[in-house]
Image (tube, rainbow, N blue to C red; front, side, top):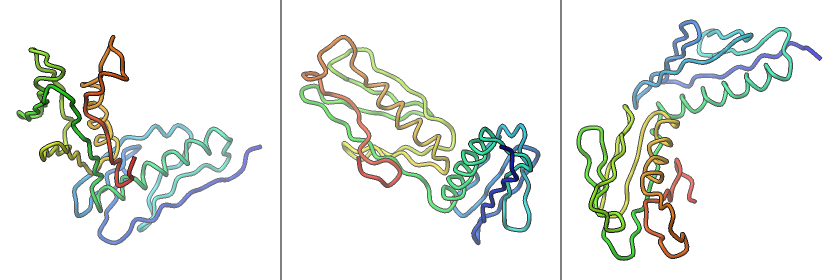
Length: 180
């Protein structure tokens, strides 16, 4: 059943949004967030301080796409008002793990007593702070902050050993303001 569906997202004061084709640029007090959307059959326009997404003959597929894009836009607006922050905890039982940040690369030394350090890259527009055993990852983009936090967990993943005994690693303890 095809019917007319439109969704309006209102931009609050202090937040500016610009639509250029299928790219949305949102700027606010914390920074600028830019994303390109895949809008095949949807109308994507801006009227005043509202962003309108929809279709005159929308099916279930367009409705799902419309709701997903609306969620992304709401996260973009929330991110430029207040940065998304993830917290990770460094856990070790015997070998103390040390972490260094050089340019846009993180070097994890002495993980499980390994001689060769593990390395991971930090995405652009993401800030990483280390305070003793807590790592804070913050960004205006929820996707980038979450990906860098996940990369920390992946970099210290233990393979071919019993996970019940070898519990060392870096683990997410706080996801964008929600305790885990």
